[in-house]
View 1 (cartoon, rainbow, N blue to C red):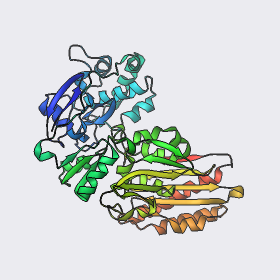
View 2: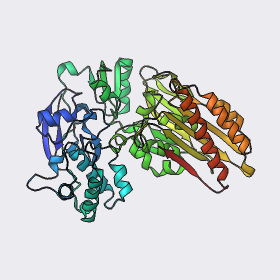
View 3: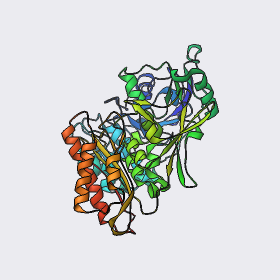
View 4: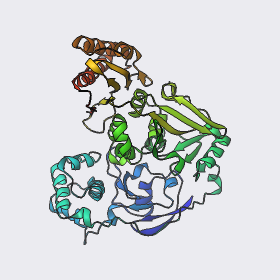
Amino acid sequence: MQYEFSVNGQITRMSSHPLRRLLDILREDLGLTGTKEGCGEGECGACSLLLDGKLVNSCMIPALQLPGTSVLTIEGLGTPDDPDMLQRAFVEEGAVQCGFCTPGMVMASRFLLQKDPHPSRSDIRRALSGNLCRCTGYEKIFSAVERAAREGYGEIADLSTTGSPSSEVVFEDHEKDLFFIPDGLEKALEVLGQKGREITLLAGGTDIMPSLRNKQILPARVMDISRIGELKGIILDGKRIRIGSCVDNATLAGDPLVLDKLPSLAEAARSSGAMTLQNRATIGGNIMTASPAADMPPVLMSLDADLTFCSSSGERNINFSELFTGYRQTSRNAGEILRSIDVPVPAPGTVQSFYKRGSRAALTISRVSLACSALPGNNGIIRNVRIAAGSMAPTTQLLSGVMAFLEGKTLSFEVIEEAARIASSEVNPRKTPGYRKEVTGNLLRKFLLNLQEQDQKGGHQDVEIS
């Protein structure tokens, strides 16, 4: 395919395979070797850069999504003879060690400072949590970011892009029936109606690109749906919140409506990975990969969400509980696209919680996850109880037994302990069952104890990961 995009302010005309990674285009085709390859799976941050102003992993970006975009790499900040203020701060604070992770660290720091010119130390730690330093020297890196902030880097950094690259794409003859970039939902559905399940849908690419690299999947045809406006946006539609399937996790985590009404969903989005991943991963992708460890499904199941699929023949609505039919399998029909997720606005006073446990303190893939929602009333009586567990069975599981037990109960020590026991017995983990059962019971106990402590005006939002 032939296309153009802007690299460090210069419009660049390229010809490459549609699935060639931006990382390889920069390093091998353009000679911009400042961007490094570490894991190639979006976990280390060594290849971080800014794409249209957003921090991303370049190993996750296929050429198919580059036309008309603007890329800023470490070379675009300054030169060895004339580094910019942030680069200079890294050098003067001794934050440059072996140098391998440094470009990604600098680009992540720039993204942070352009959003928040004066971050706290905890903000810096979180912003850089997706960038692994193999020399274990984070303190000097944090100090370098603090120094750049003190010197006003966030206020003076030029955040504008230069040039206006065309978004036009010219496919080679042999590519025209294999790759598609529809400009609207109608066109996408037309192609899907013809090709059906032969087409792999590409949005954030955070699952597809690592699988391509590891040769786990070899799609026959690929359609990029990331530019379809009808699949984006978050709106209040009567008594429901409608979320487009291509809304990314960073948008979910910061949206005022979601934060106010669906705090457990905002937390699941915020905990779903590093900022590079949050800026790319979509709620629809997280759902439709049907991974048992995905963060969104337990929350959406606990919130009793509905899904709207569309095809060239019309729309189809299902409850979230009807989506998964088996491990990595869904009830999506050939020719359909998940258009939106519709979540009922919870009753005032509803308490929501999302808990996640894994092997790392940050950015972990969950080994146990639990999403809870309940409405406390007078005398500790709770109603509208919904509890869903992830990472234990082939599909996300609604814990109907413990829900039925708790509905209409007044919370007491005995009731809480019995609920924890029922929850532990209701899950059937495939691996490490003893650990997962015990943690499930403990997390439900934690939710109910927090719920018990709330007064009727509380509006408590208990969200936690570790």
